[in-house]
Image (cartoon, rainbow, N blue to C red; front, side, top):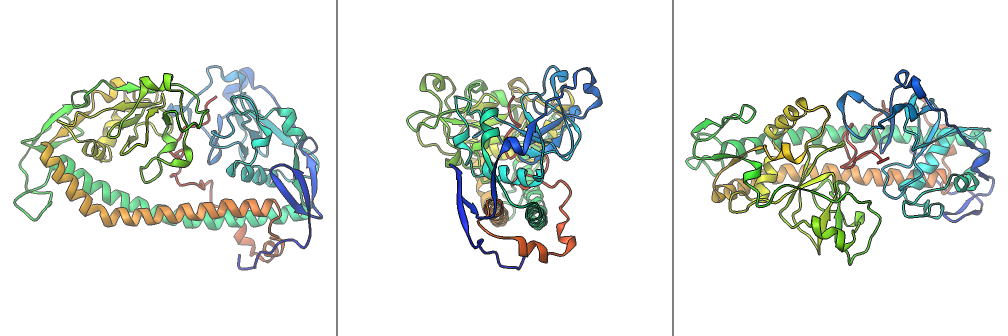
Length: 476
């Protein structure tokens, strides 16, 4: 991709509110001339189809055996999807993880989505890239309306989409495939580094918060402490002077589910409505995802700094989040369970750190094995066994971990920021390419053939494969 990218020599007005101009030789065609709705219900044949889902990573095949995510009670109302079909989610557009996807699978998808097939000479891949770029930059606002921010089908079909000449569309897609491949190789390398650092970090944490620190050795050396059986198989031995308590006995209030409300408001004078997607990879609440809830509803679900929020279902089931600080009032979403530590027994940071151990992960897996679906409700979280040293010892452990893990956390943070920066560049460049802000035809022609190969279904996101970036699949 060494060929310099330059603008086209001449432009004309695009004639759509989300795009100012396009190259002069490009057409602007209504979508009804490019795609048409296709709805074929699978009915009683649903067992013949694999279930598909539209996620941030694109259209994926769902594994029904895991129980993860949401499923329709009546699979017969699902609709057929073929390879090459385009799938749109035309409601809750600002909040949904992904508005459009091009299917590389045959299967079925819930009837809440809208399936299109291409007609005419337009490229489905170019169409997909274009609307993904518009979705990533949240530029489709002029198309949707109503409380659920829905795009009416008729409005989408009369909307115009840029159409480069067919040969140019092919070159654009070729260039973007190669771009995807390079970005994915880089992200895969960084993810491997992060995974190794996380394993090292988890081992250090596991040792400290389940075995303690040895005061007779160098500061913080986690060895030489006299141990006793914890009485919990997956926890193993703990220091003989520690207690092991159920979670329900180390919190000051009963575990509390959140509010089952849609995230529709952004009023800063209302309490913030905390969802999983509000937590960044660094654990802090992200200001750019702010949503609010009416005070009269929020008052029953308020959270405070120091609260832990446990995910009870979906792609992030079993994850824990610590609310370290808040500006103003806040409440939490219904798929999160609030745990308020009794700080005379356990420090919030110590309890949160414990949820980052292999022991906690083993408890989650055992909990899943006894459940019909991957769901951890308040009743199960309440029985979680927690090792409890004295408050003073908890402070010493946290201080030692902070000092010991600082270089590891710094390396992880650098790698995560590098991924984030590359993803932001990748998103901007795709938008520039599919809207004609830059001309990539010469660069595409100059590419070696092997550069077109795209990594196997590797997601372009901050999340590892199989996760939904701290969120859940689109709610239907």
